[in-house]
Length: 312
Ligand code: TXA
Ligand code: MG
Image 1 (cartoon, rainbow, N blue to C red):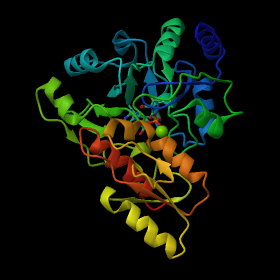
Image 2 (image 1 turned 135 degrees about the vertical axis):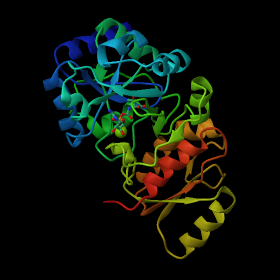
Image 3 (image 1 turned 90 degrees about the horizontal axis):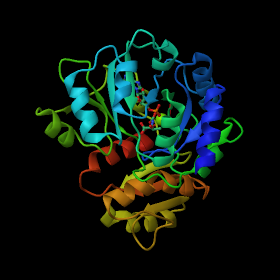
Image 4 (image 1 turned 90 degrees about the vertical axis):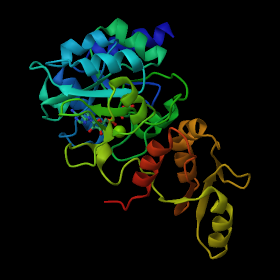
């Protein structure tokens, strides 16, 4: 553990790229204070330069470095959910290089909870800019092998922290408007945010922000994706296969080609890995069982809808 941490810090200090585990998905990290290093992230991912990155920090104390002004709501949410799967959007400090924020006046920050990456952040001292460590538009990686498959050869070091515990990207909440608004759903629900802030927190309907996670088609495997109700999944797969379709059933049923847990947390943890495994079966369509009900349902439905959306 210590050796991976030391090597990661050394690569970051040189301005290199390191893939790091977080509790949500793996990130592709660079020193957020070095524009040349941050630019390499965009090259490695094939990501358009106007898409803003999240800056990861060791603790909430870092807020005053990256944000021009830290509202009470930010301190309250940080105290309640950090380290953890929540990203805050705030007004950016004047010193932040626009390459990090895609030219926006706001900045996204979070404190991740994976022990290896927290150790890296503590030793490194500064902030690390890190988008999900996948090629642009592809499914986010939840294991070190996924990162290797997408970005091997484009990154100097992949820190292996095992499979990600949450499995879907962090909740993003924008605190720069008149009222807080969720820009991306994740494991921290809008109800949980509302309970801390003492006011209802709505989900932004889009238009306000340019964000790759907001593109209709995103988090997408190669094959087409269709979502099917759990009760009908097997029957639909059987019928369509006998009609000659090449498809993979991704579901919690015993007849699945790729297994998904039936509980919401297990489903979230496995979803992206299951999409990648099903893609490797070289079929035309992934038939994915709908998300289980529960606190994660809205976030999971959002990711499934993006994976299923028509490709650009
Ligand atoms: O869980 C996560 O958030 C992972 C791990 C690695 O931390 N990161 C992640 O990064 O998902 P990325 O770049 O794949 O997605 C970040 C999202 C994008 O939709 C981006 O547009 C949005 O955050 N974002 C970043 N800065 C923003 C800003 N200033 N205003 C609005 N949205 C912003
Ligand atoms: Mg991403």
